[in-house]
Image 1 (cartoon, rainbow, N blue to C red):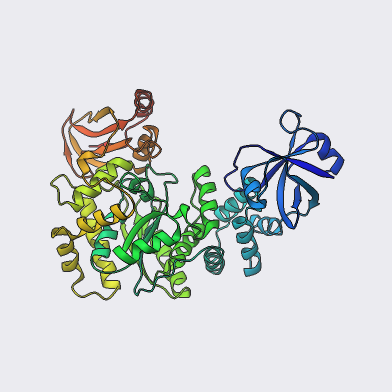
Image 2 (cartoon, one colour; image 1 turned 30 degrees about the vertical axis):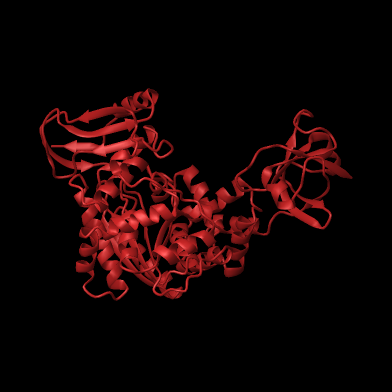
Length: 494
């Protein structure tokens, strides 16, 4: 029996889904979430079936198609297709195995990654895999296999350069925008640094969100290569490329759940580095009781795992454990962080000195890893001479951006100051509460929303003095923030 294609004009964001009329589903003995094979000529694909209880949604004799299926099979409305019942993906059994706490082998992990890459798993099935790896942490061997599988099932950026530098922070610290300072410094030093960055998962901004304030971040891999070959560096959104695509789908699930599974975090970072042909990698692990990595012991364990994976992938990996006890920089949120970065690169008096100090340390260690002589002196010369700022301008222009002046970056029009209720010293700032307040204000979706810090840990403060300012793009958001502040503002002053 042939069914007529109906364009539902909806995208799932990944999984291949069709909708059958209830009468047709009964006729074919197809149930909700069953797999069916859809065939058009020689083209065939396995998809997940949903059932429409109303003929108005999908008439009898028709099949509703989501955008991913239309694109995969190159179908048009009113085309005729045939369907047959299909078995579930092989990886379902392997996901169950991981849920039971058992180890997965190379064949099983490779099948799971293949199914994720080719949209063969439903959202719920993919979520179960993420949850399984979160509750039953993968072994070092499983993580290495996952890393290689993620990189293999995707494109690779191949550069005729050596060394190829890359850097990553495991995140969790508001305002930690070191990448946007590090890239122009390393590129100005003459080294290639093709930086792919992510959007925020649980923070007020990811590097990609912040770079987007200044320039375009979505490019095909060919254009990315052209930019790097000409200017030595770039800062682009990894989600716009087909580098380790399974990782991007996993990240989307993690964003929804608000979690970072350790094994997937390791694999995610190293797979992306492997995909851009990096040879020398700096990993920043912010550690502290108030961060994603809560203790130095946990940071050292992660360090060991990163170095072990790097060795297996034949990469030079340097892991630096940094202070994760409080936000870094003053701006928190895309526009406010972009302003901090440009102030720093322009050597403006308003630049955040804590962010600068950390960037100098990371850049020095990077040049040292690449065997550059007098690395710290080189970093300071590149920064103070304006070469880093000029390189950043080149990268912004190459990425079709026009924003070079930090004072022209648009910040949210609505502002609310949070003041100290007492005299004292700032003893603690909660990363999680500050992040939550910034997100309630609208960051990162609203680029101009976020927080600007006036005080950091160990700063003296007087009663009534400003601790931080909150920016939003609507009065409604400011009102939401005021309600949230009743629970606490994240500052401990004693």
